[in-house]
Amino acid sequence: MAVTRRQKEVLDFLESFVERNGYSPSFEEIARGLDLKSLATVHKHITNLEKKGLLDREHNRSRSIDVVPEGIRPRSIGGVPLVGRIAAGLPVEAMENSDTISLYDVIGNRDVFALEVRGDSMRDEHIVSGDYVLVERTRTARQGEIVVALVRGAETTLKRFFMEGTTVRLQPANVEMAPILVPAAQVAIQGRVLGVLRRCR
Image 1: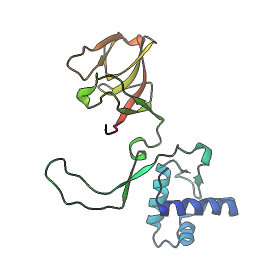
Image 2: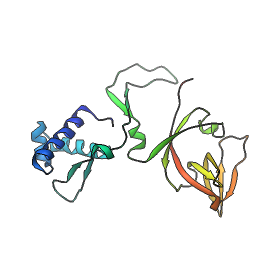
Image 3: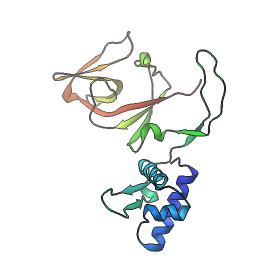
Image 4: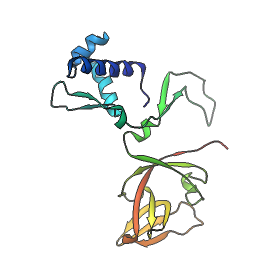
């Protein structure tokens, strides 16, 4: 999991404090232990670590910050430096930032898998053969979402999902292809698309 240097220090402090004392530190103890001047800063770090799935917290109980054991933490998702913006129209001034962009920002703690796309049925959604789609594992979908659907228990397909009475319409994003119309009982949603990755070719 991509964490900042300061977040790693907070995590290490929590682990060592619990190991020494058998209970979680208060925000004040974290601030003193890490020489932080503001409790708001401590709260921000704790909240961010919780969002990243590295801490559990019961908000109605004091001393309830629990470090999530290594074995059940979300899988590591690498971050890459976000160094600025690039013009796709008029040029802009080049600049360097110190931010990082991570796949965690897209998927959070959700159960996600990737699939390589084969075919061009979704090309008008800018999803083409050779791309990778990040899919959240789910059995339900809302109208118009791009889903991975198992049709008649035999074929999986990537399409936009529409429920129309007792029929499901799986709509391609390619004017040359017709939609797939299937009785709802013969369609099983396996996931919904969160994002697309593309290697430059």
